[in-house]
Amino acid sequence: MPKPSSPDSDWRSWFQTYGARLLLAARQWTRSAADAEDVVQEAFVRFWRQQRSLPGEPMPLMLTSVRRSALDLLRRRARRERREQEHVDIAAESWFEPNPECDDRANHLEEAVVQLPSEQREVLVLKIWGGLTFAEIADRLDLSPHTAASRYRYALGALRQKLSTLENHG
Image (cartoon, rainbow, N blue to C red; front, side):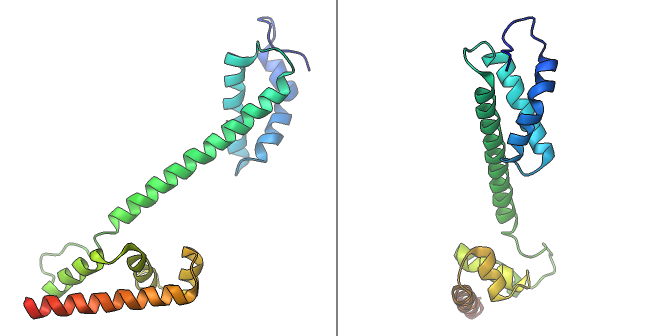
């Protein structure tokens, strides 16, 4: 492979010659063809600007750069998905639409649900609001169906106890 290090080297011809190989490699580490194209572009620009003058064969360095770019993309996407999920968890803290006319029992129930341990609250929400079976909940949360069912029972028990205490004192 010709070394694209001289100022006279035309990056377009070099990329036209070797870009398809890089794209094929990128597809092995990405979720889609569009992601692979983005990864190759990012890796190629990084290589052309900073590393093309390094000694040795450029293709191994380019493949390493493509792999690194693909992994960076996956990490960014995973971080974004975690942030979005955290936002959904925070937004889910208020289970009922605010309504000045709603009764105290609904307010007490909302307070009680928010105070549940997150594991119980998650199962409760998936069961009641999501309409999932315990098997589906177990699959989604990587639990056994029995664990999902017991967390649901514990959540209902805690809600009954909290509501009973509030009603007796309220």
